Image (cartoon, rainbow, N blue to C red; front, side):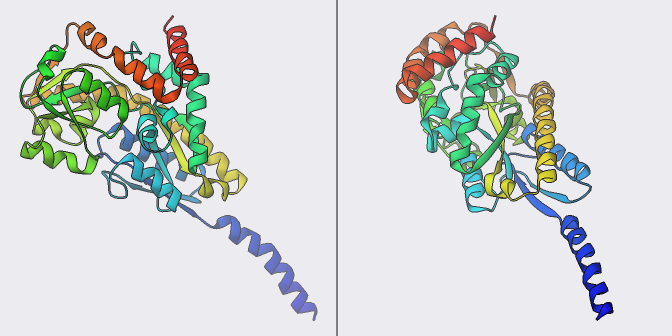
Length: 331
């Protein structure tokens, strides 16, 4: 009997230790290639989470659309439990789940990426970020986003909106970008990401609009002739985790995830700046004509009706706050 009680006491001591030693596996998905800042910062997340947890968190990174072909599928994967972590842009979710997330995707509102980050780190950005919660994803912070977008074309360089007239341009299924390219005079074709490369290569579309980082990481600079820096949009991206997965973590591992998200967001911003500069060099090395648009005013003027479109979609009060905060942050 005495020996039995001793064994019970030993088991009581050992079992909690075994529970503590259990590992948690997190599946982190990106929709873009290994060289893209979304993916390089994903590997930073893996490095920091595994180190800070002493190996109790294991992170599996699935880049280039292995688990999700687009950002909508990323969020749906978190809702279904097949994806645990990712960075997802506001307008993509605004186009599918919550129109108010379109509020910050205002064409030509921002003067530079630091301006975007300042707004996103402020009250309106936090409000937008928290809209992920009801969709089943816990938000943490803004990374670098996709960067300012430009136009890739196999027809001609774009110096004015008239150069887009008659061109069939792939856009994401995001209402604001569809309206922007209508206003520019193009024929915008919404298309999910997984279909785009083949459509461009086969000439189904004349071109597409992308930031430099994605154009290069996903090899579009190898199949298009011109890149024009229209800088019409900068979609901010939030690092999120499937809420049930996060809620199930013990307190100490939640702290590890919190700290790791901060590190991943900082890395994402750093990598985006570097990757854009490197990407422009790679475009030119491949023989692409990179066009710095000298006068953006005609594009800005054509895009003005899109401001009204966004106001209608998200409500005047929210839209006015976005514009006011952006103007205040620019001072």
